[in-house]
Image 1 (cartoon, one colour):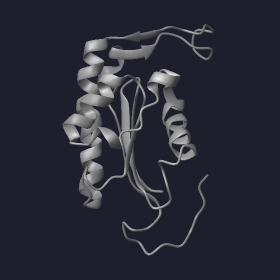
Image 2 (spheres, helix red, strand yellow; image 1 turned 60 degrees about the horizontal axis):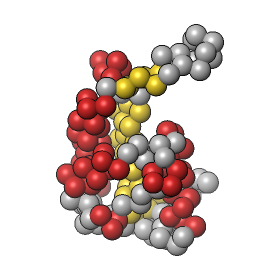
Image 3 (cartoon, one colour; image 1 turned 180 degrees about the horizontal axis):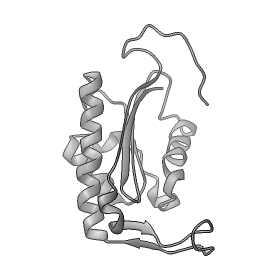
Image 4 (cartoon, helix red, strand yellow; image 1 turned 60 degrees about the vertical axis):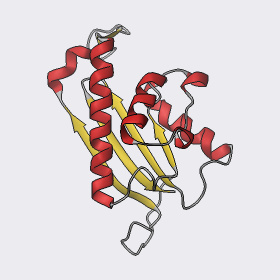
Length: 158
């Protein structure tokens, strides 16, 4: 739940500190659904070029996270928790490794929920808040990637 609050305007403020969103339709054939109620009146099927998606995901995800670090002056050492899109463990591990994010800072729930698409980050966040990992004042880094290609990051002071 979000609400507006007067803050001092520093990175010590609670709330969303920075966001970075990208899209690149040139890669749409690598990850997409070939239908849907609005277009073909069917459920459609997920189409994916797995190796290409993996390669692009790691590069694109790390790019927007570096942008978040550059915008705020924070580094991987500063974040308390990394809550990534729970697509698969290989992408999560490779991204965290490339960014030098310690494995113990990564919230991982893909083993419990699978890839739940847009619900994966809220589910992972809910688990980490309920089990007491994410606490008030923590610096939480989120990242996501989706079909088409779209991807982004958010850095939040919880």
